[in-house]
Amino acid sequence: MSNNPFGHSISSDDIKDTLGFVDSWEERYKYIIDLGKDLPALPEDKRTEDRLVRGCQSQVWIDEQMGGDRVQLAVDSDAFIVKGLLCVILAAFNNKTPQEILDFDIEGYFEELELMNHLSATRGNGLRAMVARIQDIARKAA
Figure 1 (tube, rainbow, N blue to C red):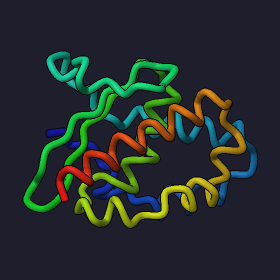
Figure 2 (cartoon, rainbow, N blue to C red):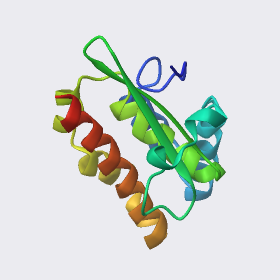
Figure 3 (cartoon, rainbow, N blue to C red):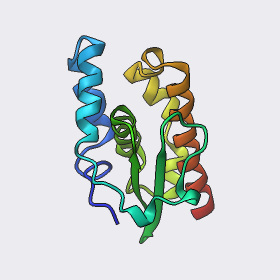
């Protein structure tokens, strides 16, 4: 499974702290895009129709497996900004138990980051579709 640092050495609190120090949204976007560069590519054989997230402007794939009682996520996208947004989500959800994923206040997290205010409507809908897919994975695993 993916060896990405999100949900391991990079947490949602780390993302909030870092973005709290960045004043302009241009710099915040740059940081989010840079996060995506730390995301290992999803192998081609995992880029299948059943892993594709519906409702996203870009192509997004989410693969999961259980590591003990924790959900391990591997993700990828064909758009740099979306890879970064996936990292923001993974920091909150990856390597967590299904219940921790379901209990996490993702809307509150996005509000703290002021994320939805600065994304286009289609990107915001795509972000919510990615979250919904992961929450569905957690419900099925619970």
